[in-house]
Structures are given as C-alpha cells and as structure tokens.
Length: 331
Image 1 (tube, rainbow, N blue to C red):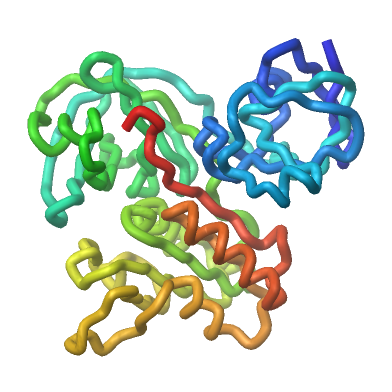
Image 2: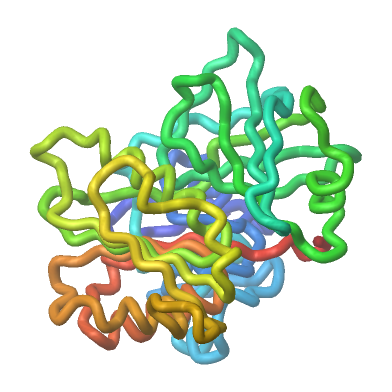
C-alpha cells in the first residue's frame, strides 16, 4: 500500500495495480476525469516526487509531457509514495453514479450521421446529474459506450443524447440500424467532471466540434436558470464543422443570452460565416483572456491545440476545461 499526497495536502492510499483515479474515488477524493481509458487528457497530473507505473498506454499524452513528468491518473498506479500536482474537486458535490434500466422513448435523425435519443427511466427512479456530465449506455450484448447528456435536468423524466455514427462501430450499428422505441437498455452514471465552475461576472467561451455541442447545450440551459447574482458577464458559443449540414442544432434558439458563432473548416463560396479551425477563430475574439474561462468539447486534436494556443495567448491554465470525445478502442 502506497500513499498519494496532493499539492493541497489531501492524501489517499493506493493498492498495487489499482489506478490512482480509482483509488482516489474510493477514498472520497475527487479528481478530474473523462474517458477513463488513457486516451484523453482530462485526468492529467504531474508527479512531483516518487514513482508510478502505467497500467495501460497513455495515448492522451505527448512524448514531451511524459518526459516532463505528466501522467494520466486513470491508467497509472503508484510504485512508491508519491506527490501529485493536480486539482482536487472536493468542493463540488457530485451525484452518486448508479446502474439502472431504461427504455428508448424517442428516436430522431438530426443529420445523416447524428441521431437524437431520449431515454426514459422507471417511473419511480430518480436521477441527478450536473450539466456537462455523461452516462455510459449498456446495449445489446453488454456493449458499453459513453454519451454526454444534452438536457440540463431530469424534470421531464427523460435523458437526451446526441449520438454520432462511427464507421463500423458496434453500438453505431445498433443505434442507426436496429434501435426502436421501447427497447430495454441499461445506463450507468452520471460520470465525468466536465461542468461549470465559477460563473459570476466571467466571460464564458464554449468551444465545440461535432456532437460536443450536446453538453454545451446542457450547460447553456443551466446558465439561463442561474440567479442574477451568479450570471456571467458574457457567453459565447463557437461550434466547428466541415459543412453546413454538420450544424444539426439551432444553437441560437437555446435558452439564455449568448453569442453564437458557427465555423466551417471546409466552407464553399456560399458560406458567409467564419471559416477555418474553430479554435483559431476563437483566438481572435478576446484581446485579454484574463477574465475568460473556456469549456471545450469535441475532438481530442481540437482540444489539445486549443489549450496550447489559448494559454500562449494569456488564458490561465486553470481556466481551460475540456471533455475530449474519443472512440472506443474496439469501436
């Protein structure tokens, strides 16, 4: 048994071959995480002292980050007592994750490769989540995939998902070819630490690609319900796509006051809006990033590049939050 000490003084124990993230969770210590498979970098932490061992490959880290002592807590265990530089989310009250049955109550094609799914839970079931979190859906044959929640509360007793088709994906074949209303599934959640932090008088920027707009929709709707004293100074949403049909949702109609900027990377002459990579368009928006906070959701490549260029432009490192969408290793 080894001891892990965080920069804020909190400690927890780790058994051999147990991930740092799992050990922290068991001990009641909340660390940031998303994919839990070593392929995004949400759970990145820096080892200040001691040694760790990888349980699986850390594809979410660059060779430079590995050399600098960064690790991913979801796929690392401790070889000795260690000290980590990582945020502790102990000040946030997270709903308890649970596994419960659910049924499909609604299916709608929002685009050729995006389907909207509404899941209903048993009448007596309760389900709490924080806008920005996700669930795992357990489908036919026990296939398990993660999807962000697109609604901001459970008041209508349904959960909204936006699901993009993955070529030759096992679960995609179910959603797009075989799924039907009243199908019985299971879900586990809520999961993840992608959620709004400080909002009062802050300039909030949402950066999304693909179905990364789903958790952004959830958080936008929650901002609309904030009391006046907690309202942000401004809210800007940038959604990147390749062609106009990728914008399957009218973001301007989501509740609340926000500036919406769609961005196309492969625009033709008929497109009158912003063009290029969405993170580069964002870079030109604010002359001073000191009062800004950025929430980025979508492709891992976009998130890594966005964090790099925005920090170089003056965005404080602890004001960039992300949730990278990474395909299952087995599709």
